Image 1 (cartoon, one colour):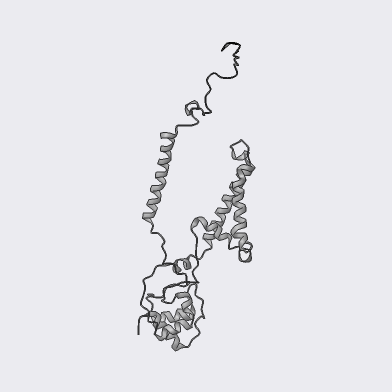
Image 2 (cartoon, rainbow, N blue to C red; image 1 turned 30 degrees about the vertical axis):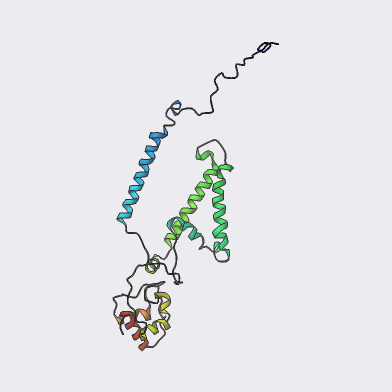
Length: 254
């Protein structure tokens, strides 16, 4: 048999002559439904981002940031407070079923179930519809998550002791304290140091380094209390009360 003889070519109209790779159609074939990524879509994204960035920078300039004093790991009376986006988890740990011996439930189990449900929502509800009413599971998970986050955040803000929070983290100037004074010994003996710090810098209670109060006013507060400080904490004699009040009024005095 000679070369090329005896060979037959069969054509099939179902196979295109010019095959094209699997490339999606151009956006211009869908008028009104899509647009070019560059520059149309990306320019809009940049404009929206610029508006939020300028607004955020304006807020930082208009409002002084609530900075606190340097962290003191020895201050056992300090009450930490997380940032606003974690307040809902912070509030969850205050409930009886999620705190104390059940802390693992509040810290891991409940948040794990909640976020796990949100991650599984696209796999549980795989319907083609895009309207929320036709996607009950996905819509329900989303609404439940948003409602729980808003409620817990509100509860945390509404019932938190902000007065103590501000006083314990307030930045105060260091004052000279005479630790050899008799008033300082009474200050330690009466347990004032536990709430107001070794150098009167404050802690669970306010700072006492520069109160501007007279000894008589300080003695009145020590006996009858003020704000979060209850009455009856001082258990010394009148002479010791006077020494304590004079010391707090002027901590550097000999």
